[in-house]
Image (cartoon, rainbow, N blue to C red):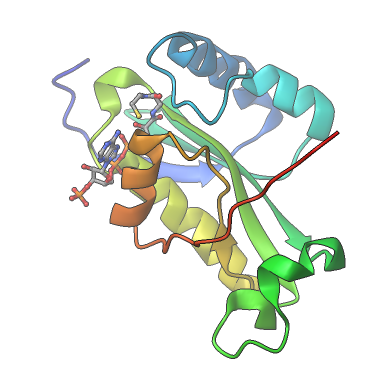
Length: 162
Ligand SMILES: CC(C)(COP(=O)(O)OP(=O)(O)OC[C@H]1O[C@@H](n2cnc3c(N)ncnc32)[C@H](O)[C@@H]1OP(=O)(O)O)[C@@H](O)C(=O)NCCC(=O)NCCS
């Protein structure tokens, strides 16, 4: 399978994919998982249900997934989006949030993550929405993937106190 050079195809995730997506996610869970997502896809799905989700297949077998949502901008986050600032994505009424991604280890670094992001972007464009992902500051792997996929990093940092 590691030498499987067949082209990857991306399509919308359907309910029948859930078992396989959970399997991939379980496999990724552990020390090598991107630091941003310390919870399982199953937990994510149980809480949020279906959103705008895609899977990537190689030779008819699902090898990766992207789970996201296209949602209206929240005014509670307006400090992140100062509405008067020209050129910021705040001009858009909706945002496409990438929530989770996972590619089977033997299929990583084959541009499959990028294909999934491209498919999500097309859907976002239909809604006039830019894409965003919130990741942990120490998640170098995911940060590199996003930057290489054309995402810009914001300088805004969130502080919290109980
Ligand atoms: C992060 C993840 C979604 C990226 O998907 P992918 O299919 O492997 O990434 P792609 O092949 O589409 O990579 C696109 C670009 O990002 C770069 N990239 C991907 N993952 C990277 C990483 N961890 N560190 C640095 N660069 C990375 C690739 O080199 C490629 O760059 P290029 O345009 O110069 O060729 C995927 O690796 C994954 O599911 N990881 C989960 C497992 C995990 O946590 N691994 C730990 C290391 S982060």
